[in-house]
Every structure is written in structure tokens, then in C-alpha cells.
Length: 68
Image (cartoon, rainbow, N blue to C red; front, side, top):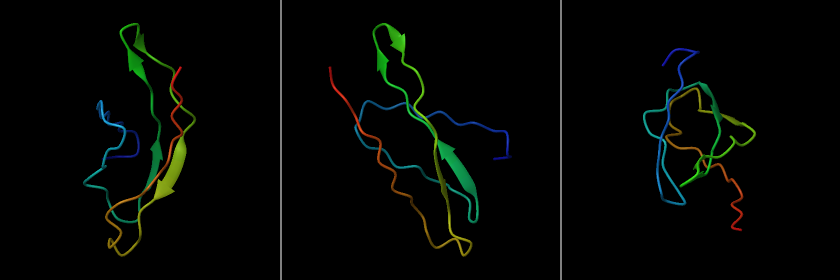
């Protein structure tokens, strides 16, 4: 992925795993809810980075979910 590429992952699960992350790379992650009315607004971005040695294969980020 270059610096301008965006990837979208759709799921109905409450958790998901991001794979194929590059070593020593900064990531910005946002989520959005989806209902029959369409996509909701994007969350504020959460920023994280992978380790330089490439050993860190996953990153845990928590978004709080509200049900109305």
C-alpha cells in the first residue's frame, strides 16, 4: 500500500483482524456503523504503528460501541 491508499473492510462482527500489515508503518483506522438507512458517519481516526522489526503482527484498538 502506498501512503494514499485506503482499504475498506466490511463485517457484521463486533471484532475483526487486520492482516498483511507492513513493518514500521503508521496506520489510521476509522469505523462506521451501517443500517438499512445506509452508512453512518466515520469515527475519529485512531492512529497506531507496527514495529520496526516486523515481529508485531497485530494491533489491538478498542472502539466503544453504543446501541440505541
